[in-house]
Amino acid sequence: MGQRAFIASLIFLAVLVALSATPFPGILIGFAGWLVAGLAAAVPMILIGGVLKLAGIPVTDTVLYWALGVVYVVLVPVAGFRVWRQVQLQNAGKARRAGLELALLVAIPLIVWISTKPRLAVLRLSQTRQPRSTEVHRFGPKPG
Image (cartoon, rainbow, N blue to C red; front, top):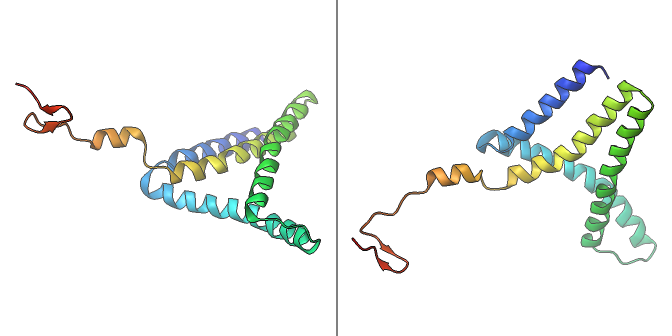
């Protein structure tokens, strides 16, 4: 992977993460992230769960979710190690590719998480109104 393509891909990924915090595009980007995450999790979960159930091992969906979560948590340091190893071997193209894979592993759950959270706290604070002096407060009417 060339340096320009790597930088452009990282910028595009950063823009997607930033847009996922906005109301309209964030919902669409989050939906796409859910599709990617769902398909990436559903296929192995169906295969692993089916094989284990055929073998007579009782498994629940919750156990499979936790197992896939553990696998995902292990994938991130492994991807980081691949980046470090390619940098040590001075293979710039493969190091960039591994770095982009690491960035995707971190960005996709981040996009899904940000898009499902309520809008940013700054937006909520700007929409709150200040109490008037005639309103009753927590400890009774406001003096003065």
